[in-house]
Length: 219
Image 1 (cartoon, one colour):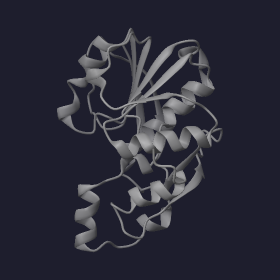
Image 2 (cartoon, one colour):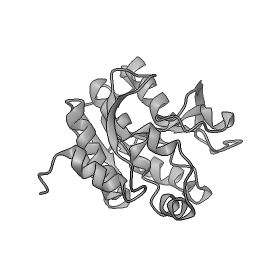
Image 3 (tube, one colour):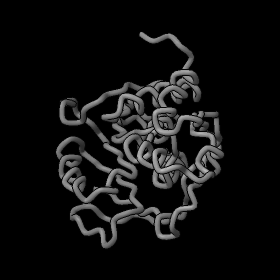
Image 4 (cartoon, helix red, strand yellow):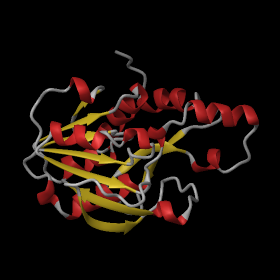
């Protein structure tokens, strides 16, 4: 096991995206109970060369941002702990682990942070330690064959090719909770809308206003 400090390992990972990027501990404005290792804002606020744009496209480092949907879902779980209390929960597409952390704080019996990206799983480990919680990590939803009370997914429908996951989620868990800011005219029964909230990415990427509105759906 690599015993280097998490900050050093995360910096090595983020520099695959941008050579002068680094991570720092940042408190989430909409759920200040949670802190995360995230990319330093200044690195994302300058003009990029063409080579840097290609690097960012090839390695976008989703785990180094807390996306709007993740921040909303973490906040709403903390405000409604009965959603997860005493349940076995999977946070799919965990990224930074923000939702998994919220689930543990809110009293989930067991939490699995699942992400296909090895660097995201490293980020999940680092942020669990930072917030003094514990959960399991897993790299492949399709290879996971344990019973789940609840599967949670935030910001995983940015690509239309991912929409079939909505059916996979229902086959994996008794209940599903999805947060999304990308899909217009969301109509995938039996998923039902349960809320709409304004949010933003941390660090703030000054995204289009339409992406600052997060919809919650439950099946």
